Amino acid sequence: MPLTVSVFVIEIRRHSRQSSRLFCFSGRGSPALLPVTPPHAARARLTYPECVTASPSADAVSPVHDADLTLALRLADAADAQSFPRFDAADLVISTKADNSHVTDADLATERAIREILAVERPDDGIFGEEFGAEGDTHRQWIIDPIDGTANFLRGVPLWGTMIALAIDGVPQVGVVSMPALGRRWWASSGAGAWTNTQTEPRRLQTSAVSSLDDASVSFQSIGQWTASGHRDQLLALADRVWRDRAYGDVYAYMLLAEGRVDMVAEFDVKEYDIAAAVAIVREAGGRMTSFDGVETISARSTLATNGILHDAFLTLLHE
Image (cartoon, rainbow, N blue to C red; front, top):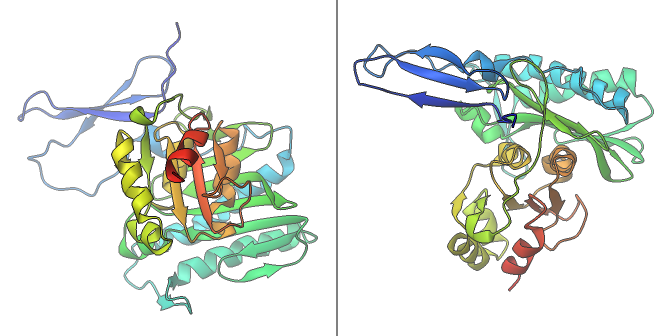
């Protein structure tokens, strides 16, 4: 039987005096063996092995919305060119918005770059971005979060990314998430599946087959969110019920869900631009995303995302 394995890394230390090795699995052939600096050697800046940082490909675009997805991937390239050079920059400009959240010069430059391309390529489409608001038609609307995870970005934590979605009548049909600090990208369009980059070629995503809450791994994102929304007791019940609970946070948790690595993500106080791209990707990977109350919308200010199999079970647990 052919072996199908997601790209991941295993580090094996045989003895403390021997160099470690990284095995990179891409699901075909033998794993590549890469040398790694042993723990007692001089410190070096962490870099990811090539099997993780391979450039994303636009070749696996879909027959449905293919032109829109190709454009979305191009927008992600433009976004990465603005955001990544500013990551961990000593002269990063940080401001505070009216809601007390942070915005950086990279957030603003990234959204501007995306809007400039859309103005040329899709002048009749609407745009809704976190930093510059909404304009134009809402029938076909590009929904943009230039840097999801700004708090991570400004502290030098690499778990941040650009989220780009095309929603038609409020339903995300195309989604791209790019996390250049990790060398990762994910994309999807309706009817054509969800994909991510690997060392050799795009790999199709599939949510997990976990079917029991006892075996489920979940990301609750933030205790503060659950408390502020009046759901702290439900969070504690959730943690008691499942196998593993963590707060991976922001867009990365949804990509872990789409890859089948976690089985549920839930959070509150989210805007359309916080989740639209993830909705397209998770759904095409076989998962389900609704509001916390189970409504199929991106405008409810809450989200419950699952592998699909466990969605109703999580809804029941969280509303007992």
